[in-house]
Amino acid sequence: ASFWHVATIGRRCKLNPKLISALIERWRLETHTFHLSCGECTIILEDVQLQLGLLVDGSALTGSVQSADWGAVCYDLLGAILNNIYGGQIEMGWL
Image (cartoon, rainbow, N blue to C red):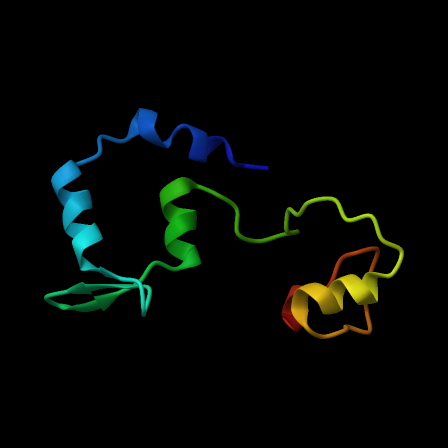
């Protein structure tokens, strides 16, 4: 599932403890952003893709759900029922 890169992050990267401490001090939990002297900065999915080499397109990887009523599962997880559910898969455009 292309998660091997995550397991090997520490092996390839030399982490700078002072930089990490500085970023931690500037993180604001309320807004989920870093407050820097040049403005606010947040992490987006594209940043994760570029840094870790993970795929962010294609089918989502989820756990096993044993249910015949996919409409109920969709409603429980998303709060709405989609008309077109294909064997437990929904169109990403609908999200």
